[in-house]
Every structure is written in structure tokens, then in C-alpha cells.
Image (cartoon, rainbow, N blue to C red; front, side, top):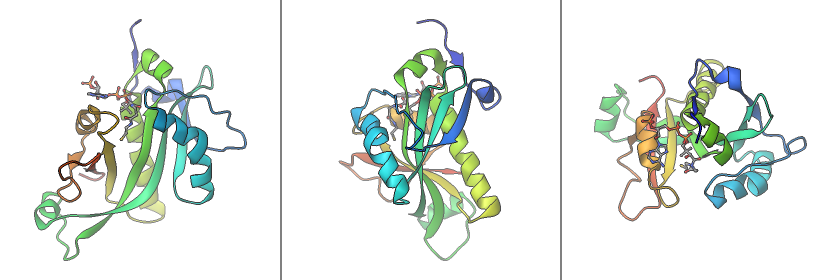
Length: 186
Ligand SMILES: CC(C)(COP(=O)(O)OP(=O)(O)OC[C@H]1O[C@@H](n2cnc3c(N)ncnc32)[C@H](O)[C@@H]1OP(=O)(O)O)[C@@H](O)C(=O)NCCC(=O)NCCS
């Protein structure tokens, strides 16, 4: 494999642009190692967007127009224990805290061969959307994810490297996903 270009927030715009998924103008060519994630983009992203269940964003390579990655975002709320709230200096009597969730995230195999850091950049891009939401529309303190350890055991390491921590609630034994959060303002 030739040396991969490392994508960071500083150089991402040179190589990629982010656009909302639009099934009417999108020829969807995409392949990641987990078929469920390919099928989501081919079959479910359009319907879920029309039904206002998930908003999907595509990362396209500037030079080719190819889809390098996608993510689907939804609004969320997480329940935090007293100790977890203390960790984020959230001194409120209620347990439930607003969040934005990465419902789906996947990087195209061909793009992974050319670039490193696309997945991490997509998390930065999700935070960017959450910041706009906070500034102009409604509050979301955390970015959350149900890390899909059933299909990708290493995905926990990926999210930890990107600053996510485990949620006490919903992280039990025998789960197929692990609930995680990242403090957008932490
Ligand atoms: C998980 C995924 C989005 C990561 O994207 P990516 O572009 O490969 O990730 P990055 O290059 O930004 O990796 C950031 C760091 O996480 C690490 N990492 C990424 N995937 C990993 C894995 N499966 N196991 C262990 N570490 C991993 C990288 O080695 C890198 O570490 P480094 O900075 O020390 O070199 C991508 O592999 C993917 O699409 N997988 C299939 C779908 C999937 O599992 N989605 C997540 C469901 S919740």
C-alpha cells in the first residue's frame, strides 16, 4: 500500500467536501467491510431521511466526486449518574442531558487505502454540526454513539482515541453495542 495521506481538520477541505445526502441526485457507490453499513446507505438512508428519522451526510473526494465516508445524525438524550454529571461539571437535578448522536458512520474501503483519519474527521464534522445546532437552534451537550462491537470489535478503540468515554447506563454485559459519549464543550 502506498503511503496514505493523513486527513486532519486543517487539510480536509483540500481533499473533501461534505454534502447532505439527496437520493434524487446521489448515485450511491460505496463499499465498507461491513455489509449492514453498505445496505443502510443503499436502502435505508433515503427513507429514514424522508421520515425525519436520521439525517445523512456524505463526505466526497474533491478530485473524483466519490463517496469517501458517510454519517447519519440524530438527536439524542442520555441519562447520566450523579458521578458522571460531576465529571462534566453539570450540577443539575435532572438525569437526562441533551445530545446529538452518530447513528451510523462508515468509511469507504478504497478511500481508507488512500487516506488515514477519515473516520476521525467525520467525528470532527459531526461536532461541527452540533456546534451550529447549539449556536442557532437547540442545545446538545454531548456527541453520543452506540459503538457497534458486534460488527467491529476494534471500534471501541477508535472512539476512545477520538475522546469518547463509556456511559455507565446502557453499557452492560452481552451487549452488541456500547453506549459512549464525548463532551462537545469538555
Ligand atoms: C470505524 C471506522 C469509521 C474508522 O475510520 P478510519 O478512517 O479507519 O479511522 P481513523 O483513520 O480516523 O482512525 C483513528 C484511530 O483509530 C484507530 N482505529 C480505527 N479503526 C480501528 C479498529 N477497528 N480497531 C482499532 N483501532 C482502530 C486507528 O488506528 C487510528 O489510530 P492512530 O491515530 O493511533 O493511528 C472505519 O473503520 C469503518 O468505517 N468501519 C466499518 C463501519 C464501522 O465499524 N462503523 C462504526 C460503527 S459504530
